[in-house]
Length: 284
Image 1 (cartoon, one colour):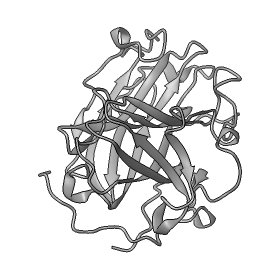
Image 2 (spheres, helix red, strand yellow; image 1 turned 180 degrees about the vertical axis):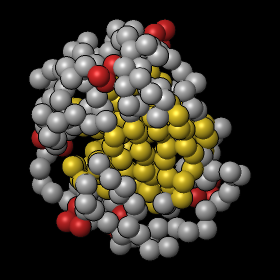
Image 3 (tube, one colour; image 1 turned 90 degrees about the vertical axis):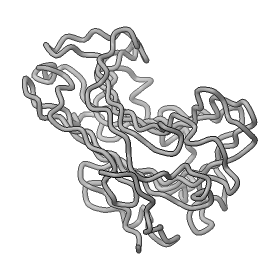
């Protein structure tokens, strides 16, 4: 799949939680008055730099505004729990807290302020298995920026191929398995020329059947498949134990490893988590 610029851009009127597709278990278009702290288990506002705004969403609707000052690294995140979780803290506001999820799809819409510079700003979104109350991660489906202009899938696992949990905490890099199917997307959404335009990002993470190599991790931009990893062994036979946790959290982040190159903003809208393909539901 060669690198390309998408010719199909999204229109403003393309999504509402009132019309969320079948399979949706969580939807946030930021139009409801419910506080973010009542929808997510963590809302980090980055010291007031990641906030709701009445006009920054699609078509001038409500959305989230992330304000980077030059040199800023972390300007906030939204962290949503789904299904069974290992602690009351992580389980706050969880969707379907008695259910296990072997497979999910999730979506976020993103726009960069006109004049944006510096590329993708690294961390954007990830789905993960939080395996215990120490935040050890059994699997992580990272979708983050690479090669400046592009997003990529970079899956990792804290569980051995034999099904043994090795990770002991969050981001326990020494005990994670990498290179499980890293793949770069094809659309340079972080290039300067696309600043000011909305893009719809959808991820799909499927854990492997216990003992098999049939896991999947892929993502789309504006409904165009960007990168895909298949035949994955996320967990060995970890999932065969009904007490073990499965996919139970999705994060939406603003974390720039080396810091923003200038003062600038980016915007989020239309967060969706589903058990089926979501799609962008947008005219081409």
